[in-house]
Length: 255
Image (tube, rainbow, N blue to C red; front, top):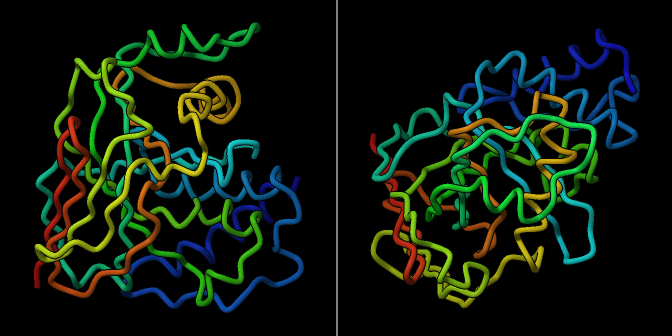
């Protein structure tokens, strides 16, 4: 794991690349480049410390067998649907339709792991969501997993749709989903979450991913990974994520 000064120097570079006024990073100096997930999360934590409060987590996995990856949802970028955000603050506008949950009860760290049933019992409402993705790297497609984790998996903001408390009758991982951009269908599919059973992500987050920041808190929003892949939208776009039976999250970018 890097020393705290090294992690803070790496975090400062990522923060300098944040938003429309930042300059994307071409790559890492060898002295700062993360070489393990432990080093990547140390840098991510230093970014979180600088960004301030967080209102939840993003968690996902590229396959049903892969170990999940996570990052905080920073409070500064967490908005309720229908959201309105200024174009001038964004260099790129990557959009992903996702299923999110709000925790009704806290799950603080404890000696024995939380069971799947305990984690599910702590959930309150389910939501349609839109993640805003904006990498701090000039060529994010060339990233290794450690560099991506250090950059909070490209997280920039999140739009939370209205909560549905009576969600347990839904097969939330097999819902028809439509991502619309300016009223036109950009992506339409059934299911689409690469992690398979998304509830395993929540169990992992409760027992591992969130522990370093004190565990899950009542009121935390946790989003479970893209169902539609990444769609980059132009300035001035209106974006909607619609999940059949769950609802909609909507966002408009304005001049």
